[in-house]
Length: 481
Ligand SMILES: [Zn+2]
Image 1 (tube, rainbow, N blue to C red):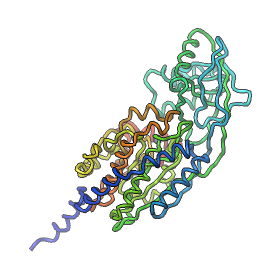
Image 2 (image 1 turned 90 degrees about the vertical axis):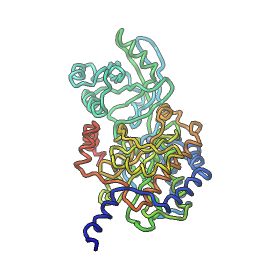
Image 3 (image 1 turned 60 degrees about the horizontal axis):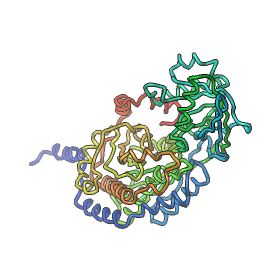
Image 4 (image 1 turned 120 degrees about the vertical axis):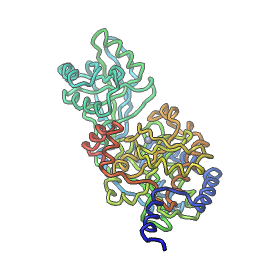
């Protein structure tokens, strides 16, 4: 007679290892065929980039994109299609493009842009002495205090020596702003290539902030070595405050465990004047394509797959953080979140964002993903806090971020050149297939994919990866849950 205890123990031991059943494998085979042969991802991205265009968070174009995504999900036959609003403190859209000149010691027209979420300049523009800021260390800033008041502070990051961490940059800028400068200049990309960002989490910056072309930055630096420099610039931005922004949500309900969820997500917002075709149009197109293909299988996985398109990613993960905060009590039932935000370059697999057991589980998917070239699992945590997975990861949810070749992506990222002509159809199709296979196999497995991290384990992950300072800053700023 078999003792009872070992029988009770067996399922617990089995639950430790993630497996793929023959039925799942059959369904995945069909899924790969459909995603490769019938992919709509390229067409979805073309519509988003060319017919809707840039999608600044909370803008009219963003709303059009959200409406379009809702209609698409409904037309694909998904369930529970809806939007969930969160509030952004301010929206920002350029109205009158920036113009600017060096006035002294030589007249020179600048390649200049308003930084994201900068207020407009006064109508007559900002005119002042340009003061070179070559260090953000508190003592160095304090030594320049009297010169910075009423001046245009030129934050010359390439003079900083060791690149300051995000946290140190933010702290340095805060200290500098307390000296009441007129405006800030930041170095940008090559002259004529706008490269947008913001450091204010959806609130308006305290003073006008402009970005200067790389070659103009070099000229400024040379002129400042020989004597005082005066500059003038102006721009007008459209600002609205406290605007409701929708995240778009849709589901394929699980056939056996509908209350357990696998999330597949990307961000709907983008920068301008590029059209966000790669960042993150390809991600949105991938999410829609995965929804189309899995719905088309007519074999729902065991668990629910929830598709989410977040807003406000570019202003500091605002939409995903709002979602994670609001749904925190339900997150223990989220088996994994899969995020795609790396453009249409070939996907080689997944970043597991510090969850080592995910790497073991992904090994079970190797036979399904190897033929697509997407079977790598990377423990690299360089992007731990840098896209919509982060608010979930810090609450312990197993996290996967699609790993793509980054080089081409970063050449376009946040620039005017992020347009549809740079999207490679075959790479976008392959990436969507990798996401579809991974999401379906995780949602259809008998076993949980990976362990949720406890708060102590999250803390240790953040410390081990050198991310704790940045996390604490984001949490203090009210961004991270
Ligand atoms: Zn992005």
